[in-house]
Length: 255
Image (cartoon, rainbow, N blue to C red; front, side, top):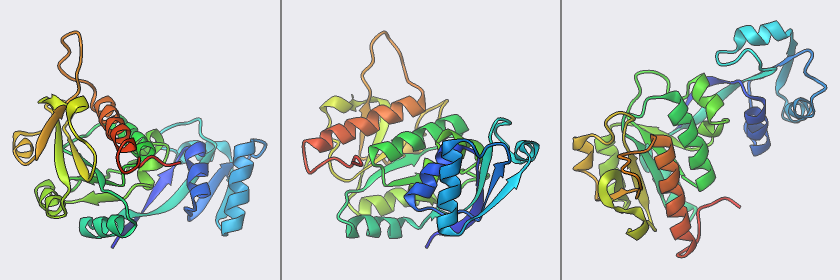
């Protein structure tokens, strides 16, 4: 069962994408001088079709409400329901005839990286992201903004990573750790049910987590570089899996 809470979407493009996908909002605030913009008018149109309250306010009111930018003209208050139980997510993936394509965050903390990973994960076809139980709010206003709202469109599971790995392995999902000591991802079979374990920005995957991976892969690099930014590394790995899947049972990429 999903857990519901409210978040604030502070990006016009993200808000429009969410509305077009069928998501709904409790209320949308629009600056009174923003209605000439075509995207804003489209937001108002979709909101009207869905019966969403649109409140016209002064731009300074938008600036006061915004937690990430003083330049926004539209803010949406959204009820979030994409945080789930892992077993339920896997059951739904299998019921839909899909292959689990999972990311596991091992202590990734910086909002920019989290938001960028979500954006790429949605584009690449990831159907679940697992994180440790958060002390704060994973879906912060900054993460929502950087991810362009895609963090609200992928099922999220917050739980003990040790327990999550056991559940995944029980469901025949292979745990793949991304680590510079691993085999090249270009010579490793990444097709089929996979969960990619991505480490923190400073130390990578913790030693306890590495021991629980079924295999380790690396990203070949020239010039003696030891590592890449975690959002860049995640993007490369996700699209290598998507590329390999194109030659097997079909790519998870959205058409």
